[in-house]
Image 1 (tube, rainbow, N blue to C red):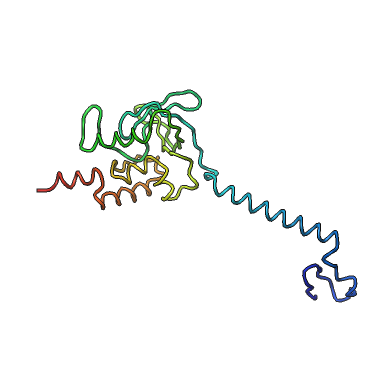
Image 2 (image 1 turned 180 degrees about the horizontal axis):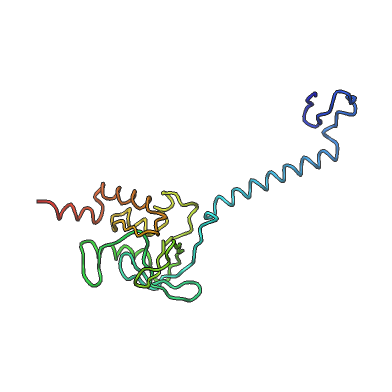
Length: 207
């Protein structure tokens, strides 16, 4: 079969050239071309919009900060009106309530500064929804992420920020392990750089 230029169709050699060639100015062909371009444009736009949204499998629950208890626990009000004491998954900050541990006050202050009363946050749950004390377990997103890669997690999730800035150690409690690898990486970097509590640990262990 012969190939013809844009504005033509592929036909067998038995068809006469006059019949085989469709002028580009044909109303039918022009209409089809514009329709095709419009479809391509819409598809591209949809892909762009989808890329800016959270992953389709990431279920987030809006909540408003009521108060901060310590570095890894806060009281949040869900949009449903339910008030929940919420424990941040995957990390553990030094104690600053019943007893004071080194760098506990600093971790609590960082969380309090980040979660000011009335701020809206977005909660992601894992396999288990509550701990043995009845507290709700959640990853606390400060804004909806574009994806769940390390960069987005480090920038937009409070749990990860606490780990990255040296305010928290990693605390992995299976089966809640979705971001375990990210937390491990961030804690390792903070420890290597002696940030926060890791600097305190180095000073405490110095002769």
